[in-house]
Image (cartoon, rainbow, N blue to C red; front, side, top):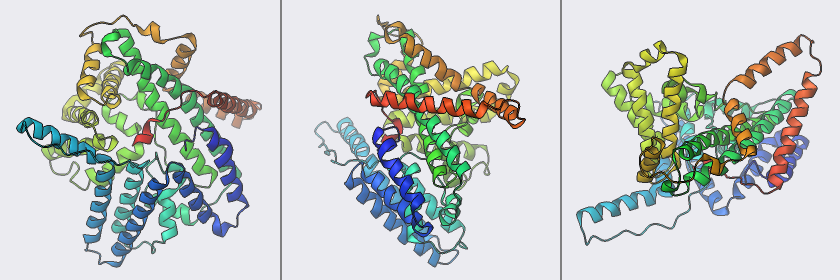
Length: 474
């Protein structure tokens, strides 16, 4: 069930809000647990069985970790291993089989072929698996925590705002809110506003950019020229940002409606002036997860430059592989990791001396080219597309004009402006003016704009417009 669907907006959400706020406080967590499992089961009962079995297994490991001695990390290792194996089986099994078959063909002409396994990847498995590994790590690191209750563990994993697409919430950061939180009108109101903003970003910006990007990047590369190729990857660059940041905004907003304060996941990443800065602003919950649970435990930057570079490449190899079982995703991760090492070697010092426009141009160029490999699954096709961006290869007769109209152009321009801090700065100025009681109608105007944004988004959804969601496949 998508947050940006009429079923969710006018069916699931009103019912759960009404049930939650009319319920006895003692059963509110159980209600959230029930509705969260129902939310996930909407995508398939078989998925839910995998999720519930995974929760039971991890609860078992947690109890063993809490019951073991302070120096005994056996159960942590077993638990992490089982979680990784579950992820490997459901997400990467056919990737490994395909590569083994390719090697067999390469080294033996008459080598047998292993058939692919007919297995469906559960929705959000990458996210809820990382949540559960966070649970094990946090319990292991702090043995003095109170005994873990199954209902609390299950709610932490299944809480529907962040279940299938993040942000990746740490157990240590949310358990206090699960046990004791306070709802308020102010928090609920800010949650509604944040949800509407995310819905608008997803439905209007991301979906419009998706139409452009899919039309160009799914077609034969020889049919388009350089201008169309650049339009396609720029549209995709905007699509993936507004798709995921919009979903994160909706998740944060939904959390606030039920008294939870979920961490921010994006901070205007496209204004970054280095790849290092980009990763401090992009998918913050994932990058900090890898930093705290992988990069630092394997040594971080504490064991010399060579080991630091190896650790960075390892983390970004895993980051790419986490996103999907293709060589393009792996290359995308290594691509970013390589530029992080280049910057760490000394290029970052040069970037600080350059005019900001040059530093930004370098960063956005690297990010945009990287998105080609994120979008196109076949590695050779991705390289062909990159070559086309720089004028190599056959130039087709379809230019950017073929794929554009006035409405798309206007939305594209608004989306680009929204990637900057212009609107947030304007909001801060108006908030200061409002606090001084100089502009009394501001709050009314802001709420009016939000209502119009919501109505426009619903109108588009009701018209049955294109409504994909990139991160559902992760």
